[in-house]
Image 1: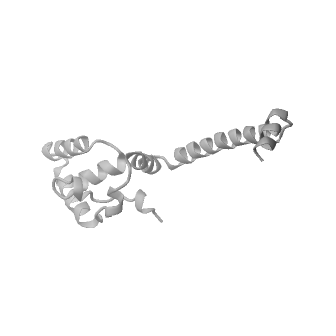
Image 2: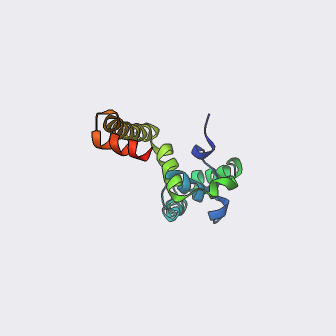
Image 3: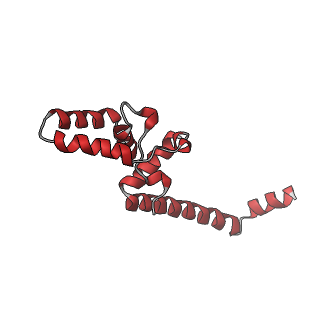
Length: 128
């Protein structure tokens, strides 16, 4: 089961023809220019054109259009989801690492708060 953010879509908003290259670029995080150039080279080389051209039109027919709400994502959110699509395990490790760091910092704050700190205790009593 895929999340809507980890699914390959046709990107009609940034499309030149059917939105397949723009969708692949959005999915992988690569500049659409490079995807289009690679497609163009594959077609013009003649060797791959009998395969690539029908696959392009088949993908254009079978892929769903990108939902509107995904166009409103912030750039850092898009970058995060591209990372999830490219390497989910690495993304999970990064999140786990950030959570460990937050947990460590919270433990330091808790230790400072719970420890016998007379100055802090006096300040808290003064504020009451």
